[in-house]
Image (tube, rainbow, N blue to C red; front, side, top):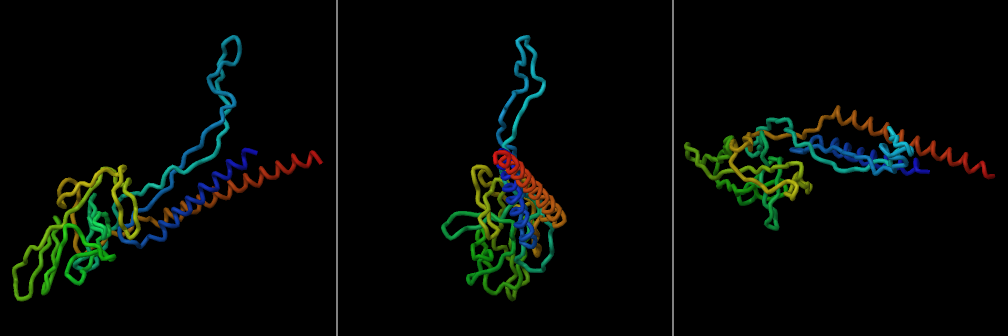
Length: 262
């Protein structure tokens, strides 16, 4: 019976929906995390009687047709790249982007990844790196003996050296933007890489070209709204239950039909 397979596609779709929601909730405290949503489309239809077809030799036209749907399919789990809440931390190397830009990170193989997670630290050489030890690009190295680090909203990095009162500029943090941010591919560790869908990276200076500005001693929180996620979870559960009811009803109808032949 067709209803069994149609309802099964609905159950599979809602199972994936719950997986997406659970990942959002699990990452509600992940710095710079961007929530996902599941998007669905109906499957191909069996046109038993096509609307608009000729209904008689006199040329009358069918005003409605008979179309039997095949169920539902998942077409994507796009990320919502909206701005997360900005929280002050007091750490000199905690940075947040207020705007469209991403921090550019160099990976061990020489390629580049991009992140909204600005919780940076220093390695044993003074380089500013991510929690995974990958350096921020362009490379910023804090000299030994620096007593403070200041990052301006345009990304200019200055330090005050021991015994000096005048700050010294040591580098410039750039930001990167993409035409289609939702087209970036997540890699884990709060990192994204470019794809053909995202378009090529466009590097620039903060406060210019819509990249946004950089806020020091601040981190961007996940853009997950817990109340909305719980509401979506309940709706997904109920949709799954209703599809399961259809499977049960179709099974009972098949059982009744088979009993007629006994």
